[in-house]
Length: 336
Image (tube, rainbow, N blue to C red):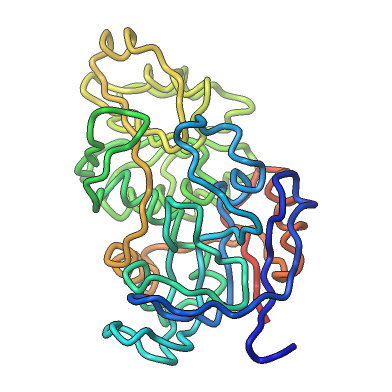
């Protein structure tokens, strides 16, 4: 392969995993404020398949424009191969990780090289490898911006009020729904780091995994209705969302909060009657916050679980794995 080209996974149309195509394309040029990364690993996230599918679940007026051919992906870990003249905080040879240009759907991460905004990057924790680092950015920042520090002043297009993280502290009870997934397993650990008592909701196969991460209580939703088993929780982090999210309102104490990662359905009248809050936010790229997460990953306070890995050329198989669901942590593409 010529030195000025690379392999990249591209979409030439919307569709199922079969539309992911491995192409030979030029290595990207740098714009001001960017660094060129030699990609070692790419983390998969739900927006990757939303983009591939044509974003049918996103209201048309909120869908970002997409030009074909498009390279999906936002989460990367790799080594700096070149820097733009105005970039001062990174040098060639630095190991870095990041979530690129999100929420623009223009991260272009499924490739051997990617031009990355320096502001979206942080130094890769020395104590973890590229695979685990690539699994951290979007899931970790989503949990962080819901629970700890919003980190931006952009409004969420799906709600009028600005999201405000609850100051987590010892003695609080936090329920995490979908606790075994990417956002869920990191949100659980962040809540534990802050001293909260955590109730993890997932299918029974994940119980040992979640207890090892620090869950104080486990609820198998296939045998027990969490809305009947839990009362007086301070906060629910619902990483699943959807039409059944409203059932978690009754698990909260008066003054508690339901935070939803995906679009959730609930009755505003019930929210008012129960005296609780509902809120969510759109995760955004933030190198500073990622550096904080990196420190927690480096010291072992947080651990990224890897569900499975696939070579970059097998991106289709990775998306097929995602479609089967019941993930335990993250799916990651590896780049030779």
